Image 1: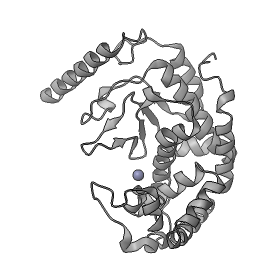
Image 2: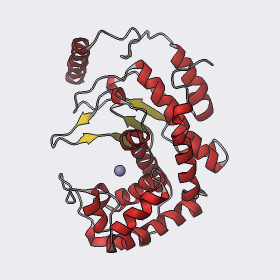
Image 3: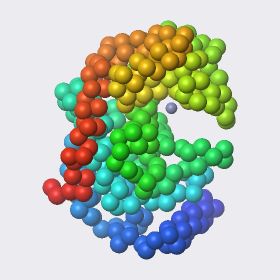
Image 4: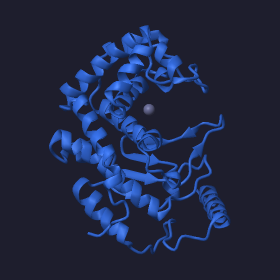
Length: 292
Ligand SMILES: [Zn+2]
């Protein structure tokens, strides 16, 4: 235990020292200490996350919530406000709108969202964009690099968010076993390096993305995440370009679509159009206003 605390202290110091070198310290401390003062943003979070959804939105980096295998820095205050408002508008409220109530999110969404300012880089040079642990906590990285462009937002945050959330859904209600039979032995299991080096190579082999080729659960959630963050034209073009792989993706998609409809009452086409409409509204949002 003592050793563990020491590691925490060293890691905390390393991050603190590094952030000091790069820029002057943010007047709002992003590192939680025992007597942290309530900011306006904390009050806004209580009103918009805790009260309606019982979600604890942690924007101050907490070392006991962080992965010590990576060198990480805290999320900036302003960026944290932006992502909190975007997560609400583009993700949470989309599900509210489609299901007609806040219950779906309240019952199924992770109870904790944890922000990290930097990316987490793996040994092989790839970036971890997000993680979800046991359906209870979702960590979003790379917050300090946030840009308000829909394709950037989808790539770095929202595709990941829908991916992780879809894991919770299939862990709660399993999908039909027919799904994993379709690509069966084509899954390439736990290799460190992706077998498919590009989206198009994976798609020609019947997977929506290289990551989807890992195993059936990843395949399942990638189909959902990619479907709802792309318009119909993009999706259909992908199916056509994939040739025979497109037919494989389509048969898996049919199972995914029916599962979401029958198990959760969610029409993925409706969800997609709501998400895309909300994306087009980004420029009209005030992402700094946290008045209550
Ligand atoms: Zn996954």
